[in-house]
Length: 74
Image 1 (cartoon, rainbow, N blue to C red):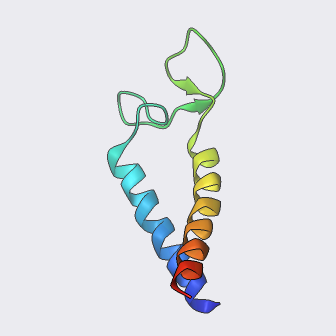
Image 2: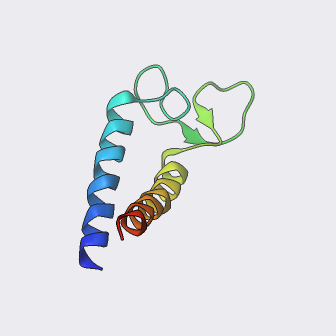
């Protein structure tokens, strides 16, 4: 159980680091700043997909991957 949590945290840290290094356009603007959580057709600095939503989904996804990999090993 402890190893599952450790592997999940390590995978999560690696993926979040990659996300911050790559800076995808749907989360960051042209200057590298975070976009605001808003829906405005005229504003290019707002998005419905923000970093908080992505990080929440990513944490569940990491846990699912670690559990799946451990199930395949046994």
